[in-house]
Image 1 (cartoon, helix red, strand yellow):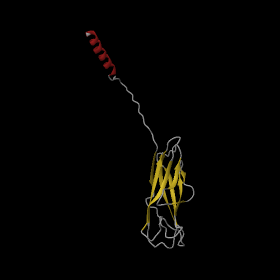
Image 2: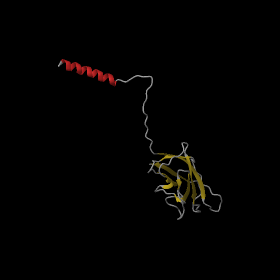
Image 3: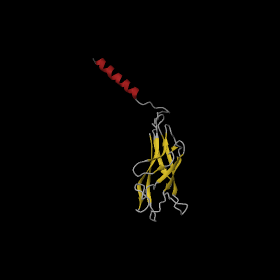
Image 4: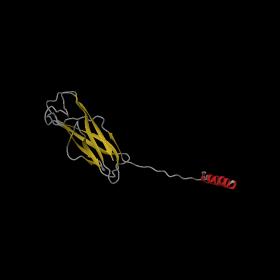
Length: 178
């Protein structure tokens, strides 16, 4: 019985000696990272002023510039840039996206989105109730580290029923990636 106990203790000491860290002049580790889909947007035009080139009720126009960064999943990833008018024009008496003073008064836009994005097709009509497209991205879309450019070129109907004054609306841009 005593021999078994001494052998058991000796075995435990030998086992513990093997699991101690070994010191040496060098060492290694494995570094692992999981890179997922991501997206970010920067609106470069803090205030987009719509102007008209003539006094004969030509539509108001202006451009909002943006920069985006995106990375979508390989194989099945997608991404979008959308916009929504989150605060309609105010004060009252001027243009309105949700309730135009005259049927046919619209805030519309066209888009540019640098590769790897695809700009919205044709003319879009801005909305206060739903997101509207600015651009889309497919699988494995990757922007540059500095970001890629895009823009929205606005057109607002110049309706004679608008009262004179300055009117502002807030447009919220959203980017997403899967």
